[in-house]
Amino acid sequence: MAAEMQKLQSEHGVTRLGGACRVLVQIRCSSGLFHVCALVNRPALAREVNRQTANYVFSPLDVQSFLDARVFGVPSRRSSPKPAELLTRYGIFPGGRSPWCVP
Image 1 (tube, rainbow, N blue to C red):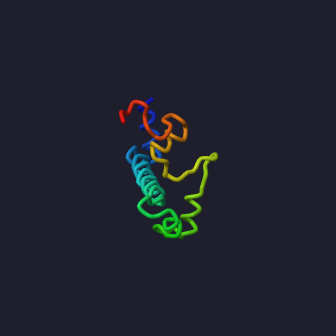
Image 2 (cartoon, rainbow, N blue to C red):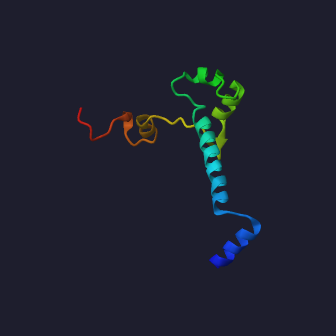
Image 3 (tube, rainbow, N blue to C red):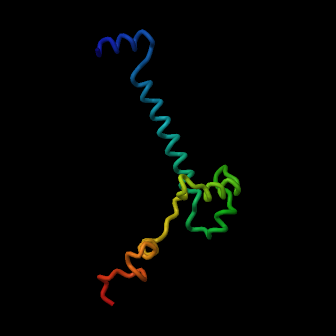
């Protein structure tokens, strides 16, 4: 089977390295897109300043659209509540304090 595969590849001028190069280019483009999307939400800026500031090639309107986007009802931005807020919200540690903490 391997010999037939090599024969088929040589007949059509296909190399294994050629297939790998495409994947490497796609990985590079995907990681760049992830980097751009991850930096749209800039936690160092105040919320309203962040919404009004352009980012890379995106206009302020595009940034607002990204920050307001939802996927299946869940916000797509990378911001999340602080752990104490999250635990308090779900009633795990009322008041944000662990019951094991000594005052």
